[in-house]
Length: 224
Length: 204
Image 1: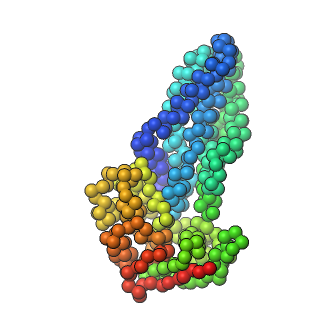
Image 2: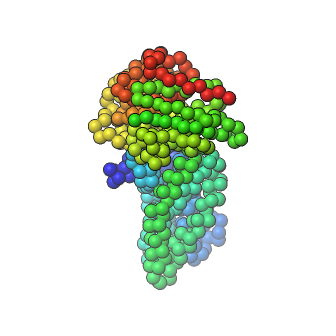
Image 3: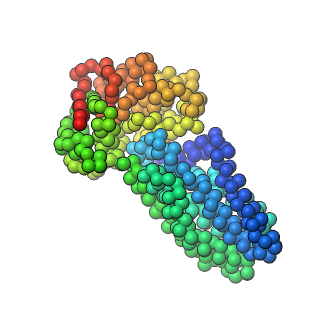
């Protein structure tokens, strides 16, 4: 039943999210506020804001993902649920991939909708809006899954979340570079495909390897 | 079908928790692990469950090393740690149905478990609204969802009331009668017939 086991934790995440809505809305508010801060902090010239809009959206998304990953596995780890997952006949990486995908749908999908709106506010030209959305769609699952590895590692070894932030931020740099240069290319009328292909390749790589790394990290944590 | 522990060594830091620990567990036997706080009961249970690697020696299941047959072993195993593994934002029924989906048996159901443990009236209550004793009941109810032949239990009677403990004991006796094996760490008196019980006391 491998195709089913993916949905077990995904569905569970949705039920939990429906019980504590505010906790899952926080990253979205956080995202809006960070985007707001840039025009306030920089000079309010429309040209400047327009040029750096893709960067603003991407940095804010990245921070919102970090913010939401903070205690990704902590609750399940402390109440012993991860042990149940290990003893389940379903494959652990598939189960955990379901959990992380569920969180992506709950937290990041609304964020994508809002980022479309906010980038129009920031004056991003309509031509590059679709590229921005595609880059977010390809890039945010990478951020989520890579972040989940670090969250699993720090949960297991009971380090604080600051360490996990320091661990993953450097790994986010390639995604940030490819994504924002794709949007810049689109804004200047060039083709954004090379960067988007690169992002897709990174996405495939992350989706295949990260669940295995997450499950090993959690197993190491349990054997302490 | 036996569980065999051979020359098990385990250290915490530089201090030995236990050394050269050996025993064999047959079906219809309950291994009661006793010892003072901090003597390594939970660690031993984790090693037997395959969650932790020992510093020396090994565990054999059906005459094979545990890591070789872990995929088969884990389908036979039910684990109850000292935490309940219940999500506080899910209801009693939702928690059990996740367990059912994660279990190997397709014919299992959660109705018997809910009824047997007197949880029917609270099946739609969120776990965060339950008392500690009810949470433990719910965690124990998980053991009878789906087939298994080994139970590994870490202080299962914690926060149960007298009726709960009685229920647990009768459930365990039934399981042993059907040829199950139980490894259990406990401080509390256990009224299960002596013929089932095999004692192991850890001391430092």
